[in-house]
Amino acid sequence: MRNYPFFILAIALCLAHPVFSQTFQMFWVKPDLIILSVVIASIYLDFGWAIFISIFAGITKDILGLNYFGMNILILPFYCYAIREISRKISLDNDFINMGILGVVIIVNSLLLRLFFIVNNVSIELGIFLRTFVFEFLFTVLSFFLILQITNYLNSSLHRRIR
Amino acid sequence: MFKYSRKNLTNLTVSVLLLLAISFLIPFFRKSTLDTLRAPLVIFTYIRQELGGLIFYHRNMSENRRLKDEVDLLRRKVMDIGELSAENLRFKKLLSFKQDTSYKVIAARVIGRDPSNWASVLIIDKGRQNGIKKGFVSITFLGLVGRVAEAGEKTSKIILINDPNLSISALVQRSRQEGLVMGSLGGNLVMKYLPKDSDIQVSDTVITSGFTGNYPKGLIIGKVVEVGVEFSWLTRYALIKPAVNLANLEEVLVIIP
Image (cartoon, rainbow over all chains, first blue to last red):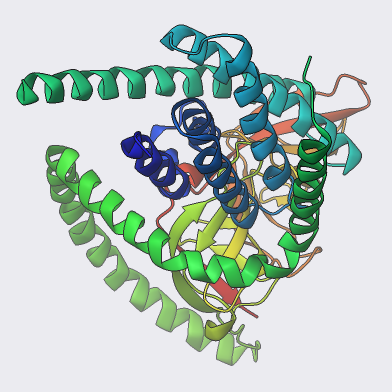
């Protein structure tokens, strides 16, 4: 595994999210670092490790939540698989394309959740849903951008030192 | 779009079935797994606290100074209240009132939160080992926090009052107007089903009515910040700012009935 820093980052994001995410919340919405870790793993790691991370992330999210059905353990590996299939068709070398993929994943995830709430008779008003969805989308994509900037900076400074 | 060989299709089907089986089993092993996750969560909580202490050093220093002044002031007030309390006790005895038993509480540290934005749930470091059970009410000294939704051996989950799935029967302290307080995943709660002629106004205090669940009567929920009419024009609603800052909870108390 060449990209082991991304592996450590993905695991750390999964475990740190329930503790740290509250610190970064704005308008009562926090960035979804667990989905972010799955997307990072799917883009930067080998498929086997990415699936491992997505299952770990799914279990973490389901264990820490209150749902009667482990929904995340099903859908997070699915996102991982879908990203891998997409990466066969288009190149995922560009940071902005990767951010776009994360955006699509968050949109799909929110729509699936909405469906899950309707099926399970959980009442979340449309206004609250839209507010949470929009801010979650913005914060998570922004967090991804910041993480990419930091890792790019660290990578380049590391290469400079090696030279 | 995607082409599969027979072998790949079989692998995929087996994987999906396996994940489906795990997802159905999750609720059964959730409590024990959460207890296993307790250690890393506690470590991350300590790191967060220490980092917070370093980053917000100056703010903490000035807050510490302000709190020390406040403690002095409160100490003086407590001394005055002590006198009043003793007097009250004497009068109660004279009137043969039954003394209300005060709540027995367990203090717990918040070690995590629900990762999603769609539920307001806290994870605390106390569980059945400490006498906490499902349905117990959680408070701070300022007011109501929520209700225990799940109790594991060493950890528990508390559903907060701003979660849309939690409804609490409430009273306006001044007018004794009844209503149902529900969460909205945001900073304010909504008090619903208020009649059009209900006596409620901004800055009224809302308390638990004691009619539902294990909620003892008289716990402060919050203060009314806005009163409006529902879209149907049949009932009114009130927005309530919770007495407790639900975003920054670090310790809570769980009431043992």
